[in-house]
Length: 484
Image (tube, one colour):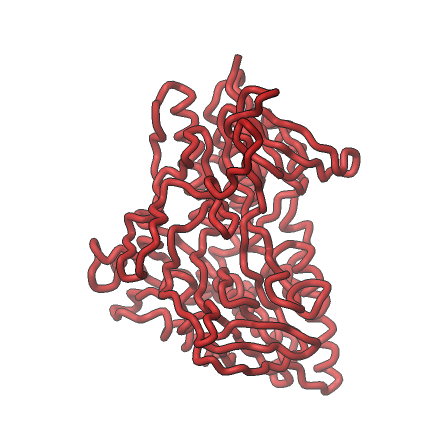
């Protein structure tokens, strides 16, 4: 009898893991994906949907036909509970799922597994801030549907400006612990570019609102870039880019609540302020997928498998200690949990600590960006986890692959205006993602592998990557040769 590997989630991490598992495992072994949505969304390109340059169907495709063609079992459902020890009436580990497909909506099923990968990604915690999110007072680009609505609101604001009405745009994060500053950064520079392209820039006030202590923190504690023979802090890199485009910024802020046209913030200094807006695109904080865990007797063991944030505990060092005592070595390497056949990949794993210096306001409000784990790191981790599981199925006693974010580099190409002749993109590489001051005492990173620049060539690369990664995700010929 073959082995069954169950993957929870079909985003960048889950889809990557499932694809490589199926490629590497003989057919007698089963790869089984559980995901609540039937579509794959190439999320980085939601930015372009949100400014009206792409349609939703250009960043989405249906997963079931791809999985059927490739021999992957698929259920449109959400995982609700993990039983790593099985149950008294049902020996063997299983995960309880609840169907989200129209024909089986709400039905529950127990899915047996030999290995489990939790790649459920983030829960978009809009509820953390009153008034935040689609259907309330702000918009988002977190999903393709959100981005479509954002584009519609932008069209409405442009129409008002063409009638002579000045408009105020605020872009950033909607909570003191939000991550994804990179997505907010990318959206605001694309928004500003698009306002110029539509001939209404002079009628717009554009402001960036962030929980970062300084611009360019990006949840990574900032970085230093080798650029033109000089070492430039990301603070200067980002401030210069914003200043050139007439974008204002507000840092060190937690969004406490949002009402129509008004954002109420608390600053690190303890001040309460208001930011007025006509359109606001603010990203939410992330939480885990609210999975439960139970032992063989049905006792709740959720706190053993999951951090209070809902993200899964893996082979990291979660020992509480002062920020100054944290080390790069605290970060996980194999993403295996205390249960040897359960792993977490991508955003689903719990970071051991923030990378940015944790800070609180006098009221005790945490105003600290959370560590980013999206995109290239998610895919790299997922591929390593998949390889380890394949090797363990073939006899290895422990994970064989590592993918620590403190030993891993990443490349990011952030669009700063989409046009084949006048567009630009900021191209940044960083190594390692989590700084290691023991290896690199001066800056925490290797400056020979950490650099950035902005220009038209980066925009062409961004377009190329959009098509390449959708080709890869569709598992088309030679997909596995395209790097993560």
